[in-house]
Image (tube, rainbow, N blue to C red; front, side, top):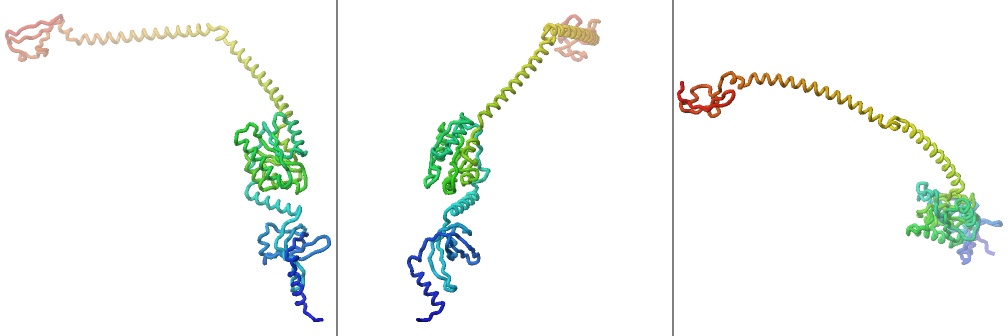
Length: 403
């Protein structure tokens, strides 16, 4: 028997493992343990185990860079790897080339990753949430036509606000085809609004009853989240029970813990509205009666005034005032006329005293030639014709001799 070294043994075993085609590419499921993220090298070191066994594994940096998540201890995963042996210490291990989460752990990782991405894009921002209508005429419902959710919604809507019409679009709520049907239902309502269809709902309820994470997974669809965000009609998400949360809940305009709660949030309580209307009616009656009474009192006060009870009183009183004013006006006018007449007589006397006619009346005459007053005999010659103005007329004379 040939004696070999440890190195030769390890190298030989390694060659056997790597030479086996069945071990060159294996798909293996297991639970992550002893996970180490070697930040300096970028490699991942871990162990995969099940109930009865454990195997060491490594994932090199070149493969790590393609991963969309970081595994955690206790997470179930499915890996694609090759089987080999690390010669230095003789460790039998897996060299992982790809890794995917398995089961609920996988869904939770995918949920958190999508939630974080949509949050960073702003799809969850409160600023983009649309307010719900106070009194919706129609309520759109997107859910399974056979589940308990639709029965709960219809019961609550019929009890609280029977005035609202329900427009149901039945869809799948789980399985591979569910996200596409849910999106198509939302887009159908949106198309109705764009076309001005009178059956367009004022608010939309979308959801289903409770279930496992896998059963609710359709409501974690990125496509559905973006369709809800783009919808111009307010959307209430009602998926599962109170403790269930989906991506649909975060992006919708309002999240209801259950389908029944969504129906209560979507419409007002008609009994409360009737009670409020009755209170308003009573208050309006009281206000109207008080206003009418106040107006009647005011009317009585006005009717009792003398101007209405004795209409001629005001006319007579104003007549007396007019007489007094007229007398005062007449007296003032007479005083002003007398004063003015006196001033006129005085002025006329002064004017008469200064009048040339007054002088002429005393025997004087005024001589003029061609309209020019003669002040000297030199202004005329013999045989000139002159006008001689007396106090009572004018004489036309001819000059016989100038002296």
